[in-house]
Image 1: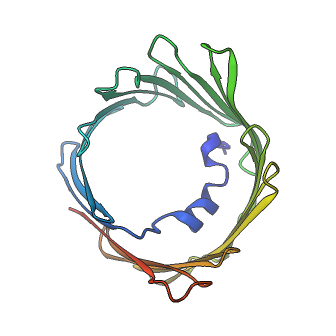
Image 2: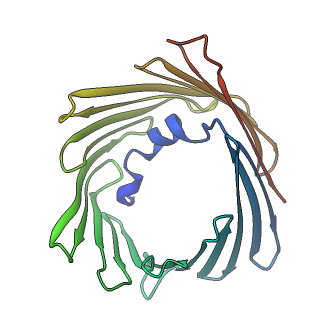
Length: 275
């Protein structure tokens, strides 16, 4: 099996530790037509501010067009073509209006033993990014670099290693120009109940600081999942997510500083409706 793209390395652990945790209020409703058109209206409340977004997606065979408009008057258009000329090749063209410098052309290629992603900015000083993963589903190595032609400098160079077993995934990342080392693991304890544990250790060499976060998840039933996480700074979080109808979820999450219990805990609510 293909090793995937660079962004797939460590994704299981990141999803376990960070996905769906929120201390804001979110609501989204999606309606789909049998002709490949989906419209999503979403709103998020952060503190006293409210942000809105309208997303329209049109699919026609191998072509997908996404148009997103938000409350900050930005219009993001993304055009994706699957199997672009050859099997495993995908092309993505994106543009944010009114930012004329935001245009980007991206190519993704998935092979049995490699996954490559290349992108270039569509402006006078285009940023070039190239990432690649080589190996197999069991063992792979990857690199991720960005080059700025205007300054002739590499603005980003990262590397990663991934080891995957049927019930255990371990990964190692070297980020921020070699300054940050991130080690993570994901262990599926019981497949039938979705019980899993994971941890991530991040160390900054320049600041000589480390962050350790540990998390777990468990399915109470086929439609209800609970998650919890805790880090070495005393921050504890938990959530309950229930699928009350197909692809429609209600999620309640909370966060508390165990070293300052007198402070009010933060609670978030997310409601996703799709029909």
